[in-house]
Image 1: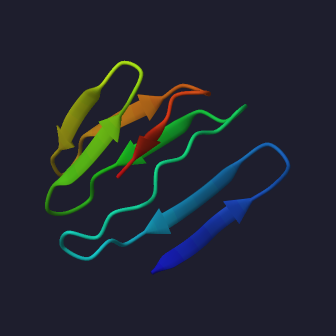
Image 2: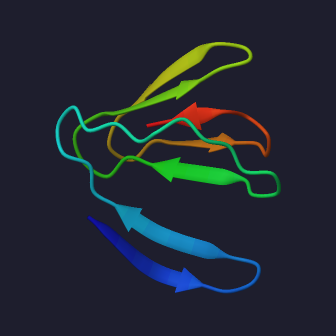
Length: 72
């Protein structure tokens, strides 16, 4: 389930609820910095080129620079 909080030309904020073991497809953003926050449970963030995996716990966040391929 996805809830859009705000969307303008410069900013997009949305809440994305993932079910256990639900995975988003690999993607990247050409101009956007992705900031991901874990609110409950654990959030696994996978990146490639170079390969990297982060496990976020509630209250933690990560920032993904433009051009970096990732999924959650």
